[in-house]
Length: 194
Image (cartoon, rainbow, N blue to C red):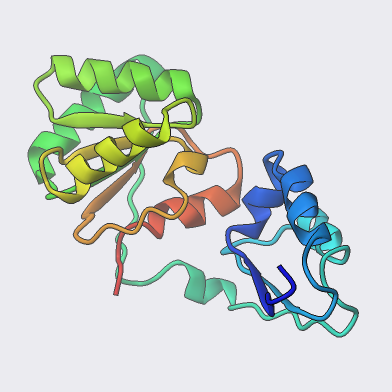
């Protein structure tokens, strides 16, 4: 470890917010004092920003993009107000009407991911679910199916979808409204890739 010169923490907000803090501290404790530490995230809420002072030197620079640059103009954003009982039907109709090449659907809970995956499969869609209860092997299998085009709908939780970088995702559906505006930015950023 004394050879390490740079430590990078990607998705810093989630890593520090989702219970990985102890793991991060364990890793950083073994890192050389003389190092560069970089934290990256699309969102950096104030409470998380305060935590970062423990990991960064006093002269650390905070760089941010302006909010207008975060949601790209290439992405067309539309919302529909529907009753909870009608959400699945409306989603199915949107999938049938637009027939996106690849779709990413976000749910707020693992249970909802499983339920919606099962229901869409019953309706004849090629759908797979992705959440934190899957083993690494299961996760890899699901991602390979999605990347390879053998499934065209991926249903995921916010944490599971971090780091997904798949070309040709044409539609992102917020099946559940995200609990945090930052999640919304992350979600829609999965499409409209340069």
